[in-house]
Length: 493
Image 1 (cartoon, rainbow, N blue to C red):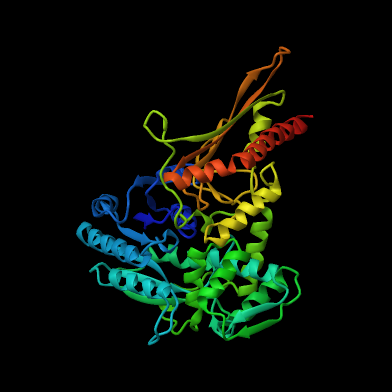
Image 2: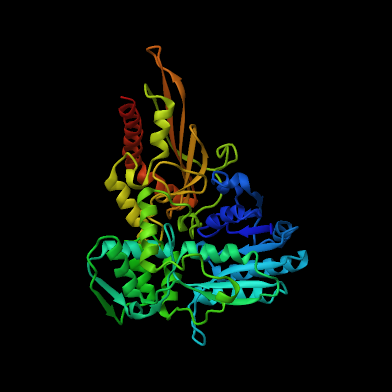
């Protein structure tokens, strides 16, 4: 039966995969986003109704749920910084109240596996609290409690992958001996899609997990086997607290401290399936649930091919600026620091654009790698995102994508790419690339390449920050402009 479905969190890891699968199942899907532009380039954007709104604004939520049969609540705020647990609670209260008032027939929420009767980490306690709010809404609700989600682009998988690949020997906290029950993202999506059609009398929380129960140390070495790496000796250390462990994860993996800290906190407990009531409501997928190593194998294949549907990187980062670039900052009275470069090249606009769109990640920044690495390390040391986040796709970008410590704020394919900085800076920063056709002095045709670094400083500290980097910027941005144009010309040859 076709249903009208609202998906919150469609720009996130799970929501970005669920929305198109609900469409494939024959449902009419509405996606709620604070910034609808971030969904503009999604392959499925034309198949869904996209509405603008903020879950912390009740009026926005009421408009979003109007005429909806099922609400999937998939927003988590832990990457946003501040009192994210309180923000998650407020969002859940708004969803519950609006859904009840609108006559919604079902709410579905993805929570986390957790033990009963223990003091939970802030991360898991928030998941439980949100589930309780939704279950008490008066709307039939299904709360699916999942363990570690394994899939290309998931934060848990990235943390496992980088810790295992970087460290030949792992000093680790005692919780590496705790038991976990990973689940493949494809199985999570199976349960979520099926939950839309569960009869209305079904109400409650249900555990879901893959077929394998493993110690966390076995999880890391299971990855090593599938990646063709030697198994890593693991030495549990009693003094490595969750806080210290999150600092270590922050340095050696792409997962920033704001996300690593709550994830690690949830590993302090055994998190395994304690009941199997879900089997009476939603049967397992045809062929059975995917084992842990099978899920790793699938995720690695996706990452190696560059075919990553969605990523944890889509989440906003704590402390990162969110305001768009003012269209005329100087006219609006803002202080603007700017470094602008321009080149005219014999390469075609299409060749220059291909280089621009593939910037960052494994291909680098066509500049001075050492200086970029130092800036990325400095950012990680102060809790920023650093350079390790890479890219979702090696050659194609869409609005909202992460590129190392930048995020795509706007992209007009073939013409304009604007990246907003998410590193820790005393102000707001962007880098903008434009490509357009140009006539050469020789009479032929080519391209005009423009590059602008823009900084809106905050106070005296912001101005001192920019002025102190002017010499480095002159080298970095001059070399970048020259090498991007040279790469396009080399491709043309």
